[in-house]
Length: 498
Image (cartoon, one colour):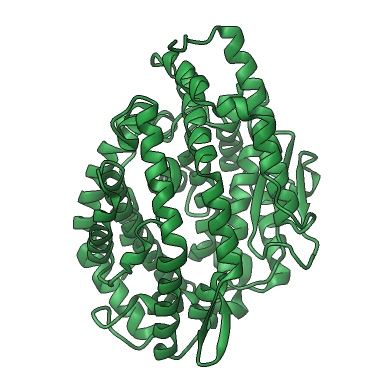
């Protein structure tokens, strides 16, 4: 018997349980990665809430989708939970392998998860090449069989939900601005920034790695962006005070925010990477950090600080969907806005008495261009991948699209692992455009040092209060009158590059 659409009361019950499910997941994530709990116990949480993601439940909510944004968000959440449940065993096994496996180069045994930091810190190109080769062999031999089976399970799951494939499902779950229209913008962006990228990347590779862009290999990229010569300009003991001072200039007293917890204690198993856990939005938001120092650490802290302030200022009067679900390009945009302050010359000079801020800003703009081009190609790839009858045929296509965008040969072995669920790639791409256009508006309205203007802070708090009620396109239109445009990122980069 086919499922029937849920009643309003049933939808409300579903919302309440979904809210608790997400809160429990965020709490578990926080406890484990903050080093407060050794095990990462997701299975009991999924078991307690298994009715949320059962096939009949997902199909039932899908029948209620009639253009209303809130129900559409509930249905997308249900679909993603359904797919996550189908592939939970795969994810756990992959994570277990990643934690257990290692590669050996010149007698040195390196844990698989530490290969990228090892590449970044290794000055010897030949050893980097060997590390990269061994790691890709491990990925192809051990993880890719699981990744491939998971991809096939997801495609069958999409068919079970009544769609030809995963892409067609998401064409119903997301507006065209997040997929097909964005893909057109990405194609144009790749064309319009090709010469700009080639010139900037070539200069940076020559200066940092000693090779031209045409000579560069994928194992040189982590080394390129490691940039240890900047470490002393970003000391660990000034990280959190710099975030506090930046927020204070905007009229926010981080220390007195009762709904924000700063977890700064050192623990042996604590993640070295900053993260934000919005456990109860807006009543309990945790910013987790174990300050190490260096530019990458500062970027991570300010990025997560953007998420933290967004969730902490979200109005508690909003619906669950508007607080916890919605368009993640919005929260990623706020995170990017604060993160990019750390390569803003005016901010660097005022906050750190920074030497050669313009030179550092050029490196930041080059890095931004690299990553946006990479994600633009990744979106084009994922659109093709999720419509393919046989995903194994996409291995060469992955290498072709990303290598052409970056002008560096990427490994085909990564064609499965380099895919995030739910087309999250779209959220990142659109967040970069959202940030670039909003930043331009803030500079025009409040001046070059907008980040030190109380009126700018008032506007940000007002917008953060909207949670994720609006999509990034809607919020940008309401604030600036502009249409979200990837070319704004190109203009942001051109503003900095010589």
